[in-house]
Image (cartoon, rainbow, N blue to C red; front, side):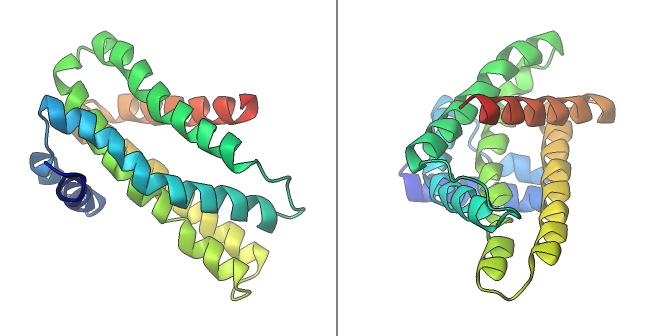
Length: 183
């Protein structure tokens, strides 16, 4: 399957998950090819990530030093492979190896929505339409939604209890924070 068709399929499935329709999981390509192709979602995520990383640093109060685009891209690639790699072991420990592929495919394609949700806030602030306080509040709302969305995906894709899904999201967040401090 070509990238455009795979992307449409993955994004459609994850849109259903945005709408809390767990049957969206049925629309994912869970074949071996579908698993590996889901990692190509990075090509949709990368431009949004680079923009949000750069704009976020410029618009912060006080402004933060911008990470060179190469450093930001290196961090994204590191995060892109680190969480699925960690989840191989975690899925075994949770006795959820049989749902690992479904979770990672949903996780990868959902990343497009997670990063895209922040872009409008940055654009509105950059355009002077909202000030930094409103932008910060909206950003917190987006982050809260993103964490909830990641929690929902973990819960339904891995078929784990609420607490376990919460711990997975906390682990993912902690890994992201530590990696961003190291890169």
